[in-house]
Image 1 (cartoon, rainbow, N blue to C red):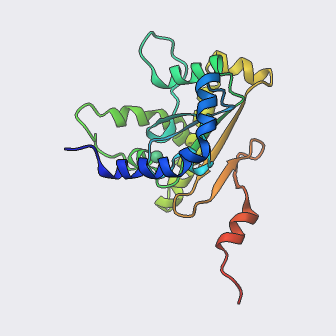
Image 2 (spheres, helix red, strand yellow):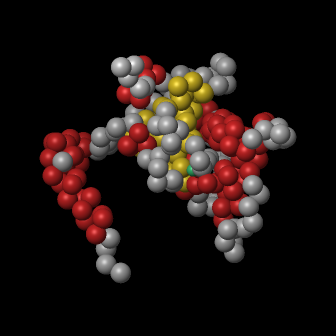
Image 3 (cartoon, rainbow, N blue to C red):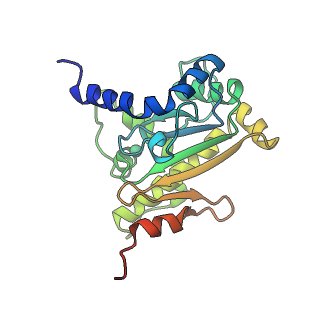
Length: 223
Ligand SMILES: [Zn+2]
């Protein structure tokens, strides 16, 4: 199988577009190194790329992606832990000022957990991984008569809160948050609507942002 032509075409578009516009920035970053202010933890899902949603250029976002954008609690057991390593690098070396946990609608990992899907592979890596959202499901309580789609949205958002709580189990995160040098945020992207909501720490609710821009673009004209 040859290298996918769609990627070659995409690279050509990048060469003719963004690279031309941003080459000075790339060169500058290659010499000075990166110093992003924001780390984003998000799902691998192909529909919710943080760089696209936040219109980020080179050097702006330090991104860690995994199934459903989860962070396991601090476990210094000597095992090779991808999220912990990314987090440690972002916080201790890059000294990011913000960590954004970005959840999204129609998350396959969350749905698999909610539907108690059978193991998806012999090793059931996804099943074990998604067990991390158990505290979110418990906090939410039983689904009862709630329609599945509504429950999934609540679970997707509760999972963001659980991940933020797990981040606080890392001593390097906790100490910087307490000193006011690092802030943790939750956000949620509606894939179908394109709406971005941000977690309000006080109310625990996700509130849409940039609503005026959104309305201007999507509200039907009156005449
Ligand atoms: Zn997802």
